[in-house]
Amino acid sequence: MSLFGPEDLQLTVFGADLLASKSYNTRWVSLSPYVGVSSYVSTAQEKTAAVSLSDETVVGARAMVGVTGEVSKLRLGAEYSAARVNSFSLKVGFGL
Image (cartoon, rainbow, N blue to C red; front, side, top):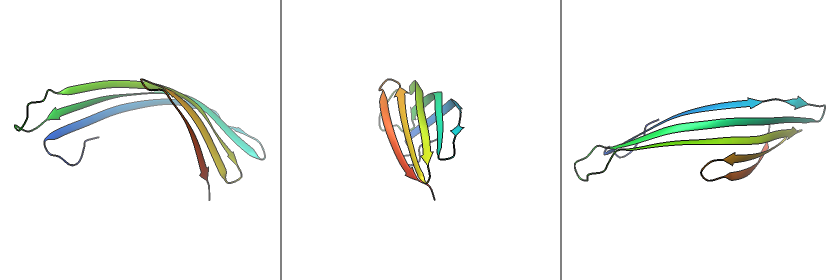
């Protein structure tokens, strides 16, 4: 992916994800627990003579574990991500 906008900066990001999940369905509820890992490499290069900045390369990774569930039209999800900054997220959705 390249950054659109300023021509004096070239930003490129490469990423890969690996995810494993299993669905469990009953008559009323569907649950899908999952685990995964994700990594990326990001590079930034200055393309102008206005300033003198060093090229930058950043490598990152995270692991996640979560579950999604569906009851009728209501969809719920919870995910914990372990990375440099750990996070926990809750998601709510409605299907049509």
